[in-house]
Amino acid sequence: MYEYLVGLVTYVSPFYIVLEVAGVGYKLQLANPFRLQVSPTEMQKVYVFQAIRDNDMTLFGFTSLAEKQLFEKLLKVSGIGPKSALAILANNDHAGLINAIQGDDIGYLTKFPGVGKKTAQQIALDLKGKLGDLATTDALVGQQQIELPADDGNDYLNESLAALQALGYKETEIKRIRPALKEFNADSTDAYLSEALRLLMKR
Image (cartoon, rainbow, N blue to C red; front, side, top):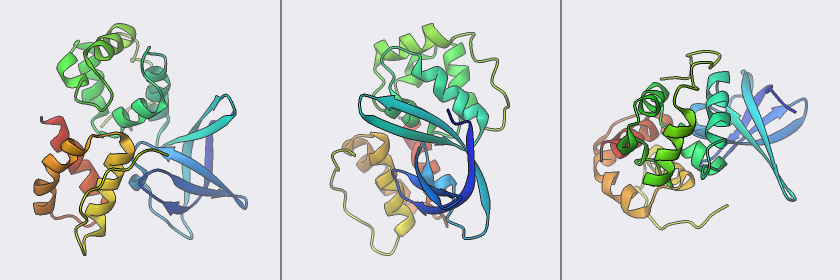
């Protein structure tokens, strides 16, 4: 139904953003909401995928058409739902993801939350050789909360930890990389989250 929306980002959380379009606020779930920033003047284009299940309708947002197309392809894999697909796309290295699929790198694919060996094999089986038609290469680069101690004075770090929770990473995984993140010096939540995802993929 929707291809994209153009409007003002009025709210960003670890779970979703609100994009105001012609006076209507659309709640969009993104792989990494902190890629976008609240701005009272800057109009932003967000590609949209609408999912309808039973009585629930959810809008998923993407910063490029290629990212949206990759999300749609992941949804076609048995065992991959919207939440798992978002968690996979949260890592900025989409080219690495595609290379892993093309090369049957099951070890790489099982590093994502909710992706076991069987699901990773299914991803490779279903998508190998089927990712060459992405429109561009621009993008190819309500759950139980876990209790993690906050780092007073570092809102960026705290928001990035909350975003990892939203993506489905386990408490033990987040606590493992937290000391390294505390030593990481950045001036945005997006930077902290990108570093956290890089560290998680190194395990």
